[in-house]
Each structure stands twice: as structure tokens, then as C-alpha cells.
Image (cartoon, rainbow, N blue to C red):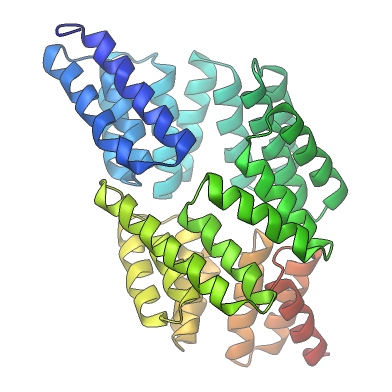
Length: 367
């Protein structure tokens, strides 16, 4: 297809989808090469959308925003471009812009992809009932088992976030029935098992899912469970694999200060975590970044500065409230600490197999 610009754009999209499914960033350069070959033949929105989605995958959200806007300049009704733009603006911390982009996607290309983004946008704004209702609407538009599993997993995550283990477990089970290869649903089931005290079952699920999709985040979570099971050597092995996965991501054009900071915290390097989280904050002001920077500063003993970022992150979800509560406690603000720790456990008593018990112990001490 030497002169087929549409074919090259389609090939770029296919490479990018394969990279997503396999969590293999080595496919990113091939996706980029195909999309740029398409643009060299003819400037077109399809290739620009691929480059924007690729930039989002690499966590270069500013570049993704710019590519999406370029695609929309060519076609103001390009629903996929609005999706790329919404994803980028969400991560950059431009909440009003993201909401606007989501609405444009709903207007120009209603369907599962638009409903899922709208549901996430509502979740970020604390409208959890509306988020769940819209995700159920997305489920009705699911046309294949993979889409159904995705929607069920998102519904499970929403239920888990409010501490409803029964509903979450039902949704994850439905997701795995629809698509047994749904790794995110397997992770959800692992969290349910850990919350119910079934650590061996949770570890088995994490061993399975990290073998299928060895991303840094999953490997770090697996290591945390292994440490809870007093298997420090095995945990260290998973953290080493997480470091290798992060290097592979970076080598293929990715940048992820949050994963770098999380790995540094897990391996006892708080100063490195602060450096990575600060660099990420300089790129984007998302609540996840504020929370990670706050927790890194706390680990480094810089609680006064940590408090300002923890307040920026807010008290939702439960782990944000926990981090804010611990930082308040470290500064001697007992009333504020009690309120945040109580809120964390009221939101989701099972939010973390390690930190939820810590929150209960800290509250017991305050009482």
C-alpha cells in the first residue's frame, strides 16, 4: 500500500491497539511510523488521531492535546478526536475542558466510547451515581465480549470504590465470564479476595495477571501483597520487573513520573520519588499527581509542603483521604487527621490491604 494514506493510518491504529492489548510499548514506534507515513502522503485526521492516541499512551498529554486539536481543525465533527482530547485534558488537569470535549464526543459520536468517558468525567467530579448510570448505558451498547467485560469492570471499580464488595465481586465475575482474558477484571477480583482476607487467592490472581500484562503498576501492587505475606525476596523480584517494565516504556518514548515515583517509594527511595513526582507536577496538574507528590514528600519527611499538595488532591477517593489524614497526623493536627482517616474508612473500608488496617490503627490511637 505505498500510496494508501488511509491504509497507513489504519495500520498505525492497529499497532496501537495491539500495544494496548499486550501492554507492549515496543509497538509504539511502529504505530508512529505508520501514522507519519500516512501524513506524508496526505494530511488527514485519521493519522492525527492515531498520533494523539499514541501520545496519550506514552503519557505525553500536551502533545496528545495538540494532535487532537489539529485533527479537529480538519474536521470539527471528528468524534474520535474529541475522545483523544478529553483523555489528554483530563490528565492535564483541565477539568472544564475535558468535560466540554466529552460533551462534544457525546454530541458527534454517541456510543460506548463516549459514554465510558462521560462516566469517568462524572466520577472525577464526585457524581458517582450518575457515573454508574452512564456506565450501565455504555454496557447496553457493548457489541462484543471485550466491550462488555470493560463496562462490567468499570462498574466493579465504582462499587469497590464505595466499599460494596458484593456488587463489585458480581461485576468482576460477570466481566470474566464475558472475557476470561480481562486482566483488569482479574485485578478487581484479586482486590476483592484481599479485602475478604483471602491473601493466597489474591496472590494467585496477581501472579496470573502480571504474567499476562507485566505493567509497572500491577507489579508494584503484587509486590505489596507479597510483602504482606512476608515474602520479601519475591516482592523484590516483582519490583525489579517493574523497574525493567518502566525502562522499556521510557525507551519507547513513554514518560510516567507517577510510576517512577511509586517504584521509588516501594524501594525505599523517597528523595527519588519526590524528584519524579515534582517533574510530573510540572507537566500536569491532575489530582493523582498532587496525591503522589504529597505522599512522596511525606515519605521524605517534608510534611508541611506535603500538606498543601494533599489538600489539592482532595479527599476522594479513600486513599487520598488516608494520605491527607496521615500527613495531618504527622503535623500534630489531630482533629483534622481524625476527620480524614474516618472519611477514608467510611468511603471504602477496604481501600488498601496495607493502608486500611493502618488507618484503623491510627484512629484507634487517636481515640
